[in-house]
Image (cartoon, rainbow, N blue to C red):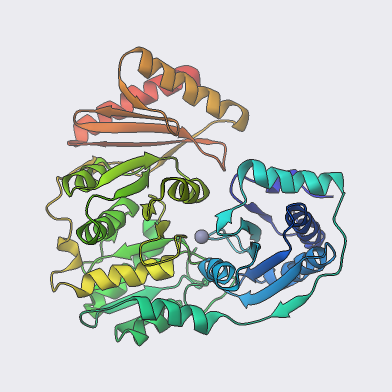
Amino acid sequence: MINPQVFRQYDIRGIVDEDLNEESYYLIGKGFGTYLRRRGLSTIALGGDARLSTPALKKAFIQGALETGCNISDIGIVATPVLYYAIWKLGTDGGAMVTASHNPSQYNGCKLNLGLGSVYAEELQNVLKIIQAGEFATGRGELACLNIDEDYIGYIVSGIKLERPVQVIVDGGNGMGGPYLPEILRRLDCEVIEMYCEPDGTFPNHHPDPTIEKYMADLSRAVVAAEYELGIGLDGDGDRIGVVDEKGRMLVGDQILNILARDYLAQNPGKTIIADVKCSKNLYDDIRKRGGIPMMYKTGHANIKMKMKEEGVEFAGEMSGHVFLADRYLGFDDAIYVSARFIEIVSKTKAPVSSYLADQPKMYNTPEIHIKCADDRKFEVVAQVCNEFKTEGYDVNDIDGARITFSDGWGLVRASNTTPVLVTRYEAESEARMNEIRELVEGKINKYL
Ligand SMILES: [Zn+2]
């Protein structure tokens, strides 16, 4: 049987041989194949990342899915956005990507897609239910192996126009973005230095997570030493971006979004931009100031992709480095493409990257602070805190937990969808005020913990 714990909110993930093995992937293949067949669908694009466990697990998935009568296009070892691209390009009904994103090497997992949308939350649970019931569709599907890399690279290169060559260092984190981004940038005539761009599933240099400062430290030093214009870091499967400026300072997710948003609004006046609840007030204010309409939405790449489609929005992003562009692109979170768009912006000016947001008011904010809270308690605690703030007349946005807005700052508390923690973040115009807001919110959290 299968360990139900590995079916999380947005994807399947666990430690190989402890939580997940070939038998599990065989069942996931059968379950997902059946899920598609019950909808009258039958084609799957399949990819996997460079983890050492991936080839065997992928093979087991293929066997299971073929036995349900689904046809599989196996595009090999790729970045997650290349799999999304294949779903679009080949027009397959579904997609499956064997990956554990930025998790350490002993992990693996699987992201499932229905068209370009994620199979997540209840729908992912439905796949689990099919497996638990053991009632699988039967048939004999066909397997085709193909390489779509050149097609993908060519598609991105043809959509980007640089006004001058840019000097950039790419840190692939030994993940799956490395084989793509430097090649794309060289074809765009950039000067590129590669760091850790060979995929290596043991991640010998650092965890491939470009939102964590310590994992960006090598890149920061390299950019300063080479006197280059910027550095770009990618996560393990290439769907999240991190940036450091020419001074080696890391831009956080909402700053990357802010720079992209200014460019987008200059070309597309008055448009709506979606950002998640963790993002800075500066981002929302700036979108408004430039004539755009900011829409605050729930954290989670699958939620955001769905909301974009529902609202017909072309640009969205998250603090976590997932950025979604349907403007001139296909709408999914592709950090390789987003990197190229960022560099297109850099090419439009000679000003240093560190100056782009220099006109923004100085805000003091915390990173995400996690407070341990059991899975069966966390949503209740957040609801109680939210309710108390509302009762006391505060300005509360409850789209995802509670974001309490003050005239000079805000505080956020939400339940993580993936781990037993409450996620909090605070921001204000002064450090003292930030700490005050933090104390106020934490005081209420502690009452209900
Ligand atoms: Zn990822």
